[in-house]
Length: 232
Image (cartoon, rainbow, N blue to C red; front, side, top):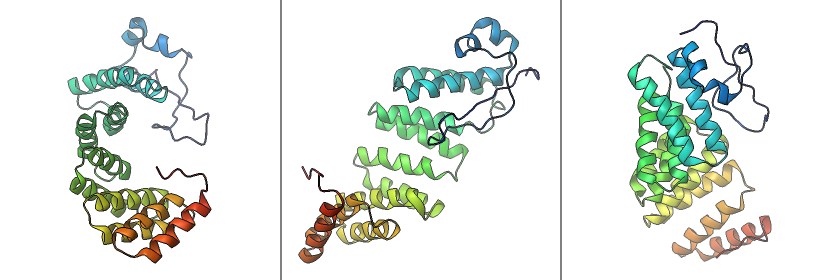
C-alpha cells in the first residue's frame, strides 16, 4: 500500500449512521470519479482501491441504484478475494450488498450475503436482524425466529430490540403460535408504549386467542396513537 494515501470520511448528516469512521485527510483532495480513474489507482494500494469501490457502492446504494451498488461491492470483494489480508473486517461490504439485494426482492441472495457477513463478524446485531427479514419474506419463519432471538441476545434493549421483538412476534403469528407472538408484542410495548403498530399486532393475536377484551383495548390504543392508520 502507498503510505502517502489515506482517506477522510465526514458524516455531514449526524442523523444518519455511515459505515466507516473518519481517519486522516486525503491530499490532494480528489473527486470520487478521479479516485476511480486508472491513473489514480496506479498510485494507490490494493486496499485503497477496494475501499474506493466500497464507498462508491455505498453511495449508489444510498441513491437507490441497487444494481450499480452491487457491481461496486463485487469489485471491492474481488480485490479482497485476491488478497485476503485486505480490509480485514470487510463484513460491511457483504452487509450492504445484502441490503441492496433485499431491496431488489432477491431474498435468497440477500440471505447468502448476510450469512457471509456473519461468518466474518458473529456479534453484530443488525446482520441477524436484517437476515431475519429476508427469511420472513421467504416464509421461512423458524429461521427468522432464530435470527431475531440471536439479535435480541446481542442487544436486549432500545430501538433495535423493539424491532426484533415485533419481527419475531410477526413470525410467531404466521406460525399460529399466538401466545408467543402476544408475549413478544408485549415486550416491545414495555420498551416503548407509544408504538401503535405493536398494539395493533397484539390486538390481532389477542383476537386469535379469543381474548376479545384485550383485542378491543389494544386496537383502541392503536387508534388513539395513530388515528389515520389504514388497517387494510
